[in-house]
Structure formats: structure tokens, C-alpha cells
Length: 426
Image 1 (tube, helix red, strand yellow):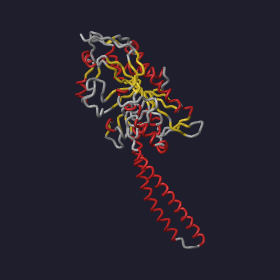
Image 2 (spheres, rainbow, N blue to C red):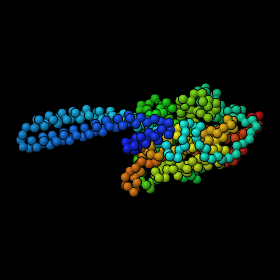
Image 3 (tube, helix red, strand yellow):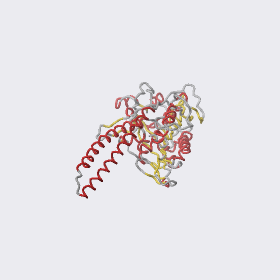
Image 4 (cartoon, helix red, strand yellow):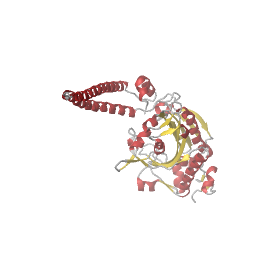
């Protein structure tokens, strides 16, 4: 949620900033609602003062033994009128809240200009793209090994699911453990185990609701619960409605969870394989920071995600998302894109974002600034470190051999019992 004071002081400036991400802010509607709210508040305060004046008159008249019926009638009439004004004010405030909740975050000044992913800016590349004469994709390789089964998953659950068996299932588990061990042992994150089902208020806090409800899976419970689309939701909500002291910061947390997405609007896109599924796993990093530290922290967090790719020796690039490609809640985002030989292209494997105070305002997450002594909104950041399924895809495709076997990256071999390759079928 944006700072309401900044909106009131400079709605035109906010509109110009939001236009950088292709969002049209209806300043006329906002200003009209603000003027209506102010007028109703002024009228309500004047009526309250008048009612208080008549209430004092009642006390004074009774103390003198005089008739107070006229003042009592005035108090009653003012009370009824105040109820009507409060109902009108609540209606205007509800319209204002709906407008504010729908606004995306303001892009940081360093965000590149542009309308779509075609306008994203490449920052750097790492690694050497392998030279395969006829590379196969992960589906062909996994199915030939008899360890990746989309048909079995479809019989159980429908499209966009997979069953992994044997060493491929173990490889996915090894990747998860490897990422968690690096982030907790070397990067200073505290591992947390969090619920996979959350209430609507948690999703509102991180920005998935109300705008992106169609992307979520909702359980038929009362009150309703939703399957998490990412660990960002429950982990960031650990600071909801809290005031942290300066000495509590920074917080670095990491969690491994399944993630569930309906992929609404993606019909016909990435229907082959494990790239875009309804259920997948991620190791997610979340940082909670003082505002002045959040942009150095974004660089740090992005580097933590990159280190996993480097240790696995997977070629990748880092791109800064342009304004038109930013996620709704993000002020700035770096995407890490890993090279997939089977598609002969880079594909996203991690998004690392600074949300500044956008999520914190929705969450009521604050810290006590020692300079002012007052609670102020925190800054929140998160990034995948990494998406486990896509990392598995990248390992399979980049480490494939001509005979169909898959070499195990050296960094993972201790977690695979010393296994050096997943062998080709006889």
C-alpha cells in the first residue's frame, strides 16, 4: 500500500510514477473522494462540537433547576445526524480504501523504462553455455530414464503435475537440502518452517489479495484458507502487526515449501514439462530491513541466489525488470535467468525484489526508529534461492550426456551418496 500522505500531497507525482509501469491512476477520482472525506469529517467534527455544547448546557440547566428539554432534544437530533454522517464517511472511506488497495507500488528511480519483458535490461552474465549438437529437453531425458512421469501425474491430478522417481526424486531433495544449507550456514539466514495454508489477511498483507485471487487455490473451509503461492506469504507475515526494535534488525529468514498456483491466464503457455506447474517447490529468502538498508540488501540477496547457480556451475544472466514488467508489489526486481539447452534460451529461475514499505503498510509491520522514537514502516525483500523444480530442469539439461545419462554436479554429489551420474537406461 502506498503512503496515503504522499498521495494527498502530490497525486500528480504519484500518477506520473505509476505511469512508468503502465498503470493509470485516476487522480480526479482520488481527489474527489479526498475532498468528500474532508468535508464530511469537518461537518462531523462541527456537529460533535455542537452536541458537546448542548450536553454541557443540559448539565448546567439541571444544576440550576431549569428545564433542559430543549437542549436534550438538540443533543438527540445531533446524535441522529452524526450517525448519518458517519455512515456516509464510512462509505467514502471504503471507496478510498478500495482505490488505494488496487494501486501497485511506485517503481524505484533506477528501474529501466519499458512496457514489457522485451525492455528488461541485462545486467551481467555468468558461466559458459554448453555446446551440444542436439540437446534434448528435460522431458525427453527424464522420461527416457523412466524417472519423470507426466502421464501418471495426469491420472492422479490432471495437467501441470509431475511424478518423479528414483534418483531424479533424490536429486530434487538434494538440491533443496543444498540450498538450505548454503543459505543458513553461509549467508546468515534462519530456517523457518511455516504453514502451507494461510488466511486471506496474510495474502492481503503481501499483495496477492484482492487483485490476484484467480491465481490462488482456495480450500472450502470457514473461515477460508488458501494454499500458498510462495513462502513469501507466510514468512513475511511473521512480522505482521509487530513493532520491532532496532536491535532486532535485520531479519533474514529462509523456508522450503511447496507452492501452488492456478496459472490463470497462462493457458497454452509452457504446457510441456516442469517449467510451469500447479504444484512446485521453492527455497525462499525473506529479509526484513531498515529503510536505508533495503537497496544494499537487494544486491546482497540477489548475490545469495546467484551463488547457488555458481556452485552448481549453471550458466545464467541477471536482468533488471523494466517498469512495465514489475510485479504489482515490487519497487525494483532482478530476475535470474538460467540457460536451458533444451529450449536454447534463458528462463527465469529466481526473482529478487525490494518491496520497500508497500507490504509493510498492508501488514502493519513496523520498527521503532531510535532517532524519532516512533514506529515506522519496515522494508521487506524476498527472492527465490532457488525455484527447486526449475533448478532440477537446468541440471538435467545442462549436465546431459549423449547416451542420455545425467552427470551430477560436484557440489551435489555428497548429498547423492557419492553418485556421479544418473545412468542411461539399458
